[in-house]
Length: 383
Length: 194
Image 1: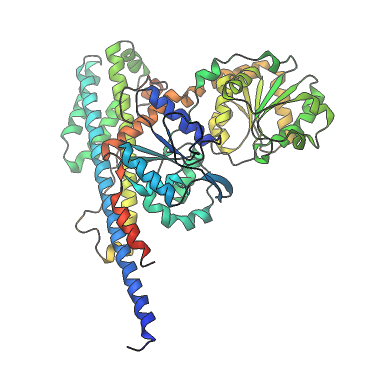
Image 2: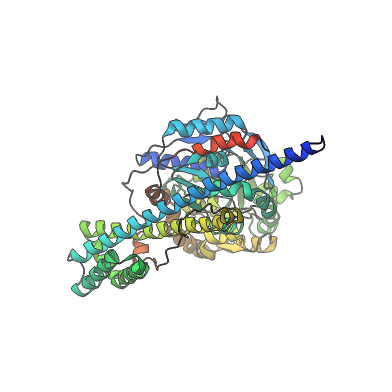
């Protein structure tokens, strides 16, 4: 069960896809209900739930499904699937997930990905969500931040299970010589036009870096308009930057294998930081802003260096220091190489299966919550 | 009745219908929560029994030194035989016995050096972890149920009937820390729940 549009890439979608594939490879049966057009090419395990509509919710635009047609599709999927367990992602979004929570009964697990629920919206939505959320036999949070948000806004507790990464795929990728250089190379992956991803901060810091270290290169991968980004950037920095556009997964792995340093200058709004895990798996030294989520992924700076969020000077100093000091980089990547296995899908999937088993042991198979349908009908008349 | 009275009658009627709907909704919701508490508690019970059995097996397998084995066997036995009133205490004692047995990292390392021991170690770690999970889920269900049972509508209309006030299960379920590290990269699970 995935709330966001399958056609559009995003963290939750990737998580659901990878999890489904890991479970399938271990011999389980998996069916994913996700928003997608009927004519989008989909993996065999994905059941499309129709076109998603972009809506504003919780401060950003999400493409989701709702309405009676989607509700009917959710019910049919639940009826025909005869599932042992239902895993709902982002059960607090107005979408398939919340519809599934309403419509289902039996063994249910919910994963909360977000850490920036706004309290006012949550307060208004709480009476609607509460009866649905309390059906979940277990709640999972992907980070300490996500868990705290959940505890504050919804109450109760959650088990912490991080997002997964196929560590091997990154660790075994072939470095690309074009993305390497004697002057040191820096990697950045993220949307160019999303200020919270922090590319402007990094470009501002590059001015000092280029001055101190001629020959340094910055490789930027991600969607967005290059001209917009470069508008106020001095020519010396422009020469050092290479834009790779959107890279696919194998190229992303090769990029992270190739660069000396991965920089995550994000300004906020991150609840996990999967790309840091990927960078560590790829063997790049990591320098990241000291957001709460990043601190946790980097074990408080032990396996990756941190700088004060948004601080251009400290970022530039950090880049120069790490590029100048191969020994410090090696110490970080060695520590990160051990640490990163806790985010490997093998570990993460085993933890999730332990949760599945525990919940399934305490409740029946998934079915339709039949008591809802006649109450729905009754509710329409008096209201 | 005068013409002006009809809207009032309709309003009262609508109010009564809404109240009836809300009553039936709350009753169904509470029923579901009670079922969840019961299910989660039986799952916890099963995991506790499993942990005690695995501990007992390990104690009688001859792979631990006799003093540790005796201590562990006694705690596991006590946990299995305890009456409900002493259960939390007995299970916490078993946790402490396991911690004592695995205090020296060498114990886990020795066990892991042969296939049977490794299997038992894996079983033990898995059951300890599942006890933690099951207890969390059970207590979370209890907490959710208590919130609903405190609502005025549930209290004034006695929607809970004769169901007991749900109790959390309080025990020390900390994993022996030498087991946590040995579990850092577990092998593929063979269980089949989807």
